[in-house]
Amino acid sequence: MRWTLKPKQEENAVEALSKALQVDGLVASLLLQRGIKSYEEAKKFFRPQLSDLHDPFLMQDMAVAVRRIEEAIAANENILVYGDYDVDGTTAVALLSSYLLSFYPNVATYIPDRYGEGYGVSFQGIDFAEDNGFSLIIALDCGVKAIDKVAYASEKGIDFIICDHHRPGAELPKAVAILDPKREDCSYPYDELCGCGVGFKLIQALASKQGQTVEDLIPYLDLVATAIGADIVPITGENRVLAYFGLQVINSNPRIGFQAIINQTRKKILTITDVVFIIAPRINAAGRMKHGQHAVDLLRATEIEQAEKFAKAIEEFNTDRRGLDKEITEEALLQIQKNKEEERFTSVVFDKSWHKGVIGIVASRLTETYYRPTLVFTKSRDKLAASARSVKGFDVYNALQACSEHIEQFGGHKYAAGLTLLPENYEAFKACFEEVVANTIDPHLLTREVAIDTRIELEQITPKLMRILKQFAPFGPGNMTPIFMAEKLKDTGYAKGVGDEQKHLKLTVTQQGAKPIGGIGFNLGDKLPLVVNKNKFDAVFSLDENEWQGNVNLQLKLRDIR
Image (cartoon, rainbow, N blue to C red; front, side, top):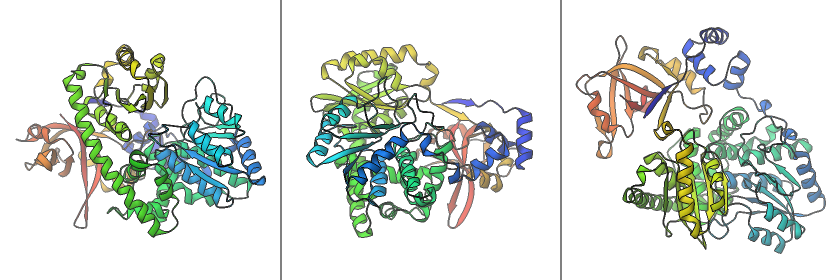
């Protein structure tokens, strides 16, 4: 691991903020790193308000989208709410369709089949709309690149409203309205919304025309918070407000579908991390293993018995997904080792039998192991489909764009993307991708980095500090859990490996003049020799609370030791 200590904040700024907030310099420094320079900004950070949300009509095409939906309702048209099969897409479809159905009956949903149709808007979906008399499709979390599909729908007299957050291409589809804060001509103040977040802005605009306020929409925020966590968008600005209130809904009054999932766990209070690792994989499992519509059905369930039935089926999908994901990851790792691909700048693997639903997870696992921009390919009908994952600091979307002559279709973000290509172009694409990455990546980025916020002395770690740090949540990109470095530590003599094959490290550390404090290092069991025999060492960690038999103690959650 590469340890990178963030630059120290300017002393005058630390002192001024420290005085304004009546906090110590350590907390003031952490806030300045997050761009918080004044009392007012700190107040917005620590006490998010729904009034901090932007006016939805600041988004390009919002007024047009609202007018078209109002026309559809006035004319008794059938509206099809269409979304991608992942967490962001299915939560967005559940959100918009349930809101519309609360006052208008002619609304149905459509989630494309991951295997039969693939990502995004499909010709099959448009044919379904035509066959069933839908004259308006509202696409969520997809569509901003669907130029040919929107044109096809237009020929059939079907209008499109697109709610997307992906980067548009040079040309936009000829839809009635395109809501996408990443549009070049969109001056909306915040451009990091997820697809469900854009859907929320649409219902916020519709609600305002019906005399409702944003407070009336709070019950929908559990869906938005889940999508924000799952889609790994920055938890800053508007996303922080939406995630903060969405977590409150999840923990106090979740929709029945979420309650059915939570009932299967032992968790009492869920953090955004729990949402990402407990709720999101189960929602995702429906689209990966069976069909995304199962997730929408669960999220819109109104009876607990019905929800528990859906949740049980989805739990089975998730168990199947875990088994497949483990099996395919092992095969892919063997393929990389056999072909000596660990010596390359990229990891690109392919097997025609791999399950398309888990290749994204496998790509993430391979990136964790070899820390390279990674592509996992499988066969999808007569084409090859892949999921791409990247390393911190490298834009895999741009790398794919540079290889676009070999690709049929691609889309996504800086760190995660998807693509399809013809089998005969695989080798040429693979060579091109390796060449582009080799020529453009900073070699430093191929070593995993741990970014350290600040040095700390053990005596500074107090329950008061922990209480303040907990108020920094929800954590995520743009506001990561604070990471500290402490130097010249010593174990009290009881360090040991724990867990399966002793792969985790448990210890209690001291520092001159400080009380001992416990620590746990997951997957750091191999570091045991560094800490025994009273060796002095440095450690990088976040702070955590360990609850055991009703007692709560502070502990170090170790990231690395040297």
